[in-house]
Length: 159
Image (tube, rainbow, N blue to C red; front, side, top):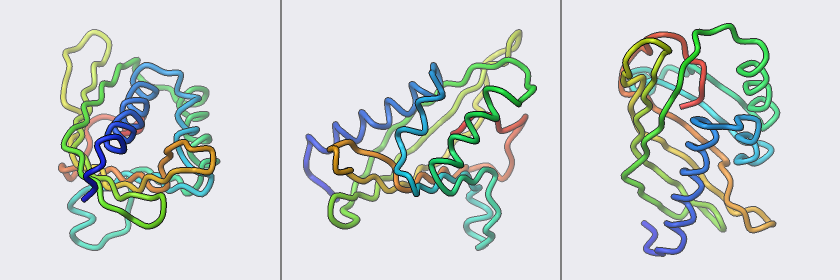
């Protein structure tokens, strides 16, 4: 576990930026938070515990993440909605030179136009964050593990 308060603040700022871009936009800037060969995956806890590799969403590079943004912004036909991320309970552990395993709780709320707000998904992030040569922190792996076995409605936005 890392005891560096400056590093913890930097990592929390990365997660705050992540939530801001997904919740408020511009979503087109979201892929910049990832390294080129990043993995972005959403899985259920049930699938993970059973050893099933099925992912609800899988992007195997920043290019794949950019394709996901393109699909959301230009191809998806969904009911208008707002999402809101809450992230807490950060735990850091060294993962090699200039890299850290980061876990944190998440809850994502969704408000569909004309309806009330509901908890869309909750779970735990299991990520790897790395410091790039430009000094910026970016996600090498971002894995969202959903507590529920299913997701109500369609999974449009990243968790």
